[in-house]
Length: 495
Length: 104
Image (cartoon, rainbow over all chains, first blue to last red; front, top):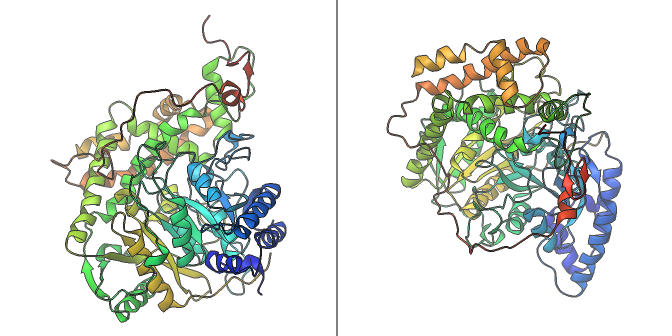
């Protein structure tokens, strides 16, 4: 058998059920891989004791004939998820030392289904970033490198630790979260699959909040089938999240037939951006051809407000962040600044937040404060919310015309070098999310599937966007692309 | 309206940046204010594109999925967890969070 840590969820599940391996063996293989992976800086809090305990319990369940979908499968958990008794810092210094007394709903569901936690994964601070360069733990390194070039590349962000860990086979799969593209962009940069479900599919309870009307959790996996298996285990109604949808969760894996005959796939003309690299354009056309060859009908569509999604996002997300992050004040948890003689509570807040938040988080909290402040609320915040209504309507209109799914590139480029964007202004970095952010603004499900390599040997992803609550159909479209693309490349091990 | 946004967006000066930092309760040293004001202007300049959009008679979005919030019985479902609530406090004394003196 191949190295156990290189297996995907479906293969490992089937091997466990047949008795060909044990969760203990799978978990040990992953823990060994993690030990040798410090150069990637993906895992930041390792939990080998918890992992081995969970693995033994999973083996006992499997032996007893009680093996739910995720039973015995070792995962990495993004640091944004609160995990009981285990550091959960959202990669921020302001949550230094924070160990939750509770478990997030999504991780509870995974553990109830028998999953094993290997440890916590690095990310951009408070999920704000597209390159994993804003973490208090330091940068995450992408296991992929350009041909003949040892320069360290970004795994993308904010779920960069998750992407790097899955691509480097440190775990079988990982949790991610996506507010503007934070699952799909890193998945594309690391040559793996990532899905952000419909807003309300996964409970947000116990996930450190960034922008509550946009945040959604989802799986980051080695295949579309794995994404279907893990997404089903993560989804479901939760009374503790008032925006959680009280809808039945289908068997997503059973919907992977690969049959897309007669499906109408929209190609939005507004996603053909000026200055887009030729390789991205070529990949998009190849993806279109793959779906056409599989029997889908290709339809040119228009989503006229696309270009306004990113500027509207950079009003709404910081506004919500400034409110959500007000709780980090040095009183109830995490870091508190050392105070000087005579400092009062205001100095305590101001010093704590200046020391605890990194530059990008400070910038977004202050932008959010500004757009919500008296005199600017209507001009910025309300206007952005109206634009959001129009962005959502663009999608509703094309779905009403019978479109089943929308195909776009996942990112405007392949993974770039760490530090390469250092001298760019913040807006240049924000453009990474130009293809993904519309999906969050409209609350839709979106999936990134690896579909090819660029001329430097780096993975490129395609994004498929689905109708609300139709993750099953969306994953089936992704499955058709996955089968046609036949993407099997892996990064050569250098770490 | 578009003109107003434009004027305001370009008018982020050091004193406005200082005021925003104060509102956000983040200490910013005076020598960092020019760079901060500059970044604000870059970001607000980008956001300014929104003024091109015709939003007349458009409702601001309140919920991305049309749903009525669930109701439940107004009853106690949780509580009596004082040690757990205080477990992560930087300073907790006698069952309370401790902070610098707030009232003289």
